[in-house]
Image 1 (cartoon, helix red, strand yellow):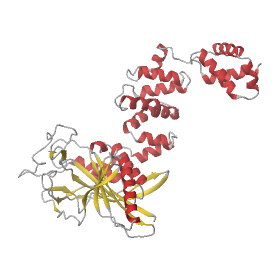
Image 2 (cartoon, helix red, strand yellow; image 1 turned 90 degrees about the vertical axis):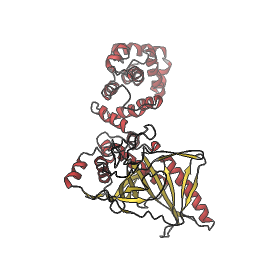
Image 3 (cartoon, helix red, strand yellow; image 1 turned 135 degrees about the vertical axis):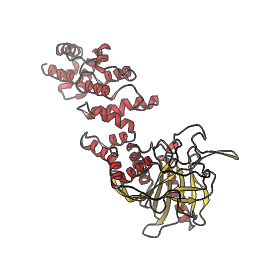
Image 4 (cartoon, helix red, strand yellow; image 1 turned 30 degrees about the horizontal axis):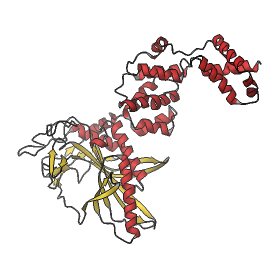
Length: 475
């Protein structure tokens, strides 16, 4: 039987602030265990939460980027449950009135656009981190109270590819807006996948399975494909898919049961009595939106229209915010954007990957990369000479033209010199002339290659090819 896959996502985004959502404790990642904790985070008697203004601004920016209705009044609630990672015994969240609602995000899968509706985004505080060591569990409260935005989609996604594209699009937005670093491996962006199957043509949803805490986009895809196969096999046998929470084990390439969902959990939501409703003025919301960085969707269109880049080139750039910023700066001083993008996603990116660096950590400035690209574009140096030059200046940031002259890497454009070499090559290969006049292009390439070999690649190949043809036509 054929089944339709129904997928909804819940994405938790840890937003960038100096302090936690409701306290003045630092939200710095990777600090020593339990060093960034305040009495507010630990819910000591007599302590009161205060709302982090920056966290609110981050949520407004995300809501606007996702085409959402922004609530002009903040309301917080208590989500009550007892667990070791929750020091208060409840979590401060937004259940009744989320800060953003009724939004959407357009994604592209195989060059086809699809609109995914977003039910809501709401602000809340993160839980502590549990570290399991055999039968012992340690708790690091540094993460407890960090500001989170939770994004909940409608069940509009229909495949693993669509789910991966959606998460990647959200990751692009939050990183380019600089409201989160989007590092899934560090837990800055985490995803829960809700998935069910139903026979094609049936309108009723099947039983939903939740896959918790996905920490990479590739694993989201693998987990969904695995779960589709598992549920399909159960339904084909006439068995029921149980509503449960599972996790994906990459080593086993399988989803594993965590707990059954025999009945819905009652979190006994109540209004947060220590935080009164906060009115957000239109001026505050508008000012926050005006401060937003360029959205990746806008950047994408600009790259297509202004720089004439193709989809593959744009997608590679948008995967790395630092590389994108580097390209933008370098593009200010070049005319041939094609040469620049080839260099940035080619030789430059290859170096970054090999050395484990990013575009911000190399000495070579975008301005000197522009100069290097211009030297290639105007024929002053060849691509092979550029690679040699690049190796000398990547960590010194020396002026490319000055260094090229010092290394004697400049291409030779002296016509008389080139003609002398060409005639020398022709005289050594007279038998090839007949092949060229018979229309064998490879023979011409061979002769030009001999010229490049004799000059150690220092002759402009385009000029050499042009002059070679002229000389052969004379014979």
